[in-house]
Length: 306
Image (cartoon, rainbow, N blue to C red; front, side):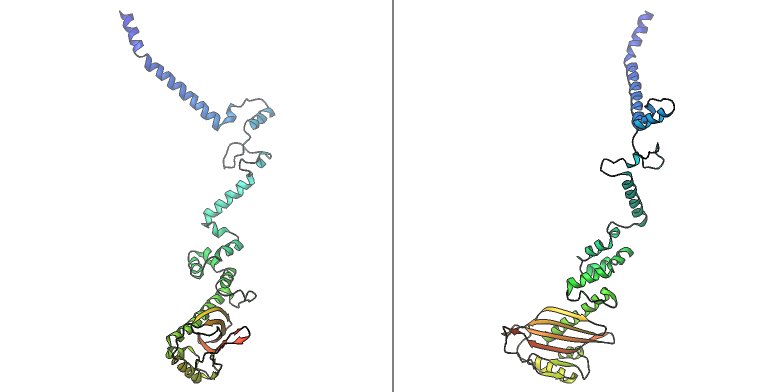
């Protein structure tokens, strides 16, 4: 009876024993697989002398570029191509660039060559370029590049002044040209509004200022010029100007603007030239000339402004 009860007890614990043995075998196999993947040279056949090193190199022919890696790559392994076509030297250069970017905090655009950066900035308008210069010091340096402002000047104004070398750089020249173009637009706004006080403040109070209206009659001196505009504003017709082909040239204290104007009455377009002078930090008009354009060699009936 005792033997029978012992046998029954052993058989009742047999499934647990079998499961434990299987679990131990699985752990042993897993440890062997991990060791063979991470440390393949441990399983390599060992021989005496030089053959031992040669066997290890044949088993592991990889290149480890990380610090503290196992094994030192030989001269042939350092030039072995990677799967993506690169080499060890290319990987080291890429790593150095990545480290430099993390240290300096520079973005990809900030690391571009100046020519590419200038070309990219040429697609921005005036407000966007100014906002970009306020982001950080590197972008401020790129946005203040003289070539970028030269490209923006040619895009916004004219290509005629490609050979010009501004004394204070293209950024200052762009700002001065924009100020003159704005003044020129204000001149036509005053004409549309027929504001004599605004026209009086617009002209320089000097005896050498001149104004030639489309009638061809010249007026010289500040008082005569303002009186001519008073007569023009009393004219019954309106002034609905369309200004096109504006070209500005700015010097140190002198600027002139040429353009074509089209009026909403039965007449041809006009050639207009406005000249400005800088006095005490402000631009004043000193000369205005308007004449009818020639069309097919003939001059249309002029409009009498005064």
